Length: 566
Image 1 (tube, helix red, strand yellow):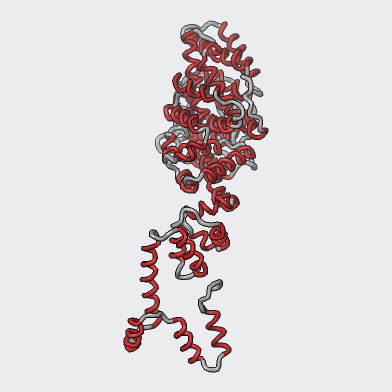
Image 2 (tube, rainbow, N blue to C red):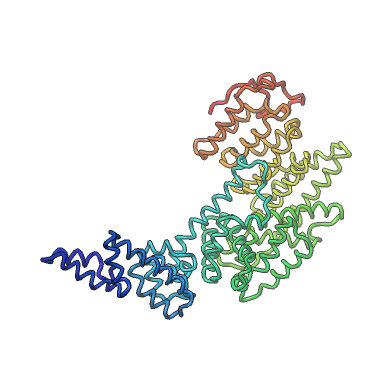
């Protein structure tokens, strides 16, 4: 009751503590605070005779008055609503809280002194509907950050888990869900409800995402930037869509991601937008680069580029002669430079990596040509040419993120098409030309899932096993995510063909290090239990060695079976 003229508990306590006749004090209090109603004065003595408590009577009257007031709030003027708010705020922590909350929600714009009063009362603030909190957040960015930051962190953690913990859902590729399905995520829906129609809050969310992306380099913040915008697009929040200059670009890119391909028409639309960025609007390139850094965008652009490279071989064209390929490279380069561009606030478009265009991409096409020739010929000249190609790829991969992304997607497509020649050529080259920090999580996710689906096509081919496990994965054995992915691949292939004869050696080679994560150690322990458990169909020790000749690989050399230590 503090802040009001109502005689509350403090007044009664003081009065009773200092009086000579408590009954007189009580009588005066009842007289001063009774309801002015002739009907009630007549009824009260009758109710007293029936032992009805006065508190029950007044509670019932208050309930009716509250409901009556709630029913007329919507018809009151904004000025009258503010007056009622000022009068009712002292009772916000009592039985009138429902009235106060309803009054707060009614006016479209609350005055600053009311918003400050809400902030000062933490319990009332927590109970306020989002429409009221939104007005508070527009004036208090710190409070908005406290509400939003846990959601942003949770979203990123969930995306990272989807990429890395593939054992939880081995049948689902990270890139399988459509963009609209992704946007139904509870966190996306919560963020859009927080933003509502507030351009100011939307821009604040974008500022948070830019800052977090620059600080962490986590590309999932770029996904969130695109998802929030397109979720508001689904809701047709026109005031925000008109305020974001990247809306049309994001809309077109979202359609491409949905189709998992960028056709010539949409490519021209994207190019037209990029070409239309002129001074003083260069800062737009920062947001465009974030949209293109989204793993779903990178996957779509890179997979389209790889498909077009296959077509260029049939057309006998060079990559630089294809306007569509050059546009895709431009889009990829935008996305890959996003963090540096925003961090340095240098929004100029970087020149295209000419070595990637003139040397690296033609090398990939030459690989495709050699693959085609190898299907019809066993010419020894191919071996020397393959060595030359391998050395050239290794030379061009370091320090060229554009070339690496194309090589990664090129390799994934080769695995999905069960192309032994390309798999055994590309994986060793990537291992030699890339550092562990260069390996993208989305590349490893697709690669390992696709390898696991090959089954006996992989386990029955010694050369492929050596290329995958020894020449590629073993190179990065100190990386936690690589070790975890390898354990998953071993578990997927364990019952395929004669692969079980290699398992003990592989488990020893890919035993987790002490600094590796708890979930990697846990999965490894489960895998060891699976390997050492007796098999009903065919005992593990009775599995015959592979019929193929030994490749001379020390890693996959046939060793006596023994239980690996955890």
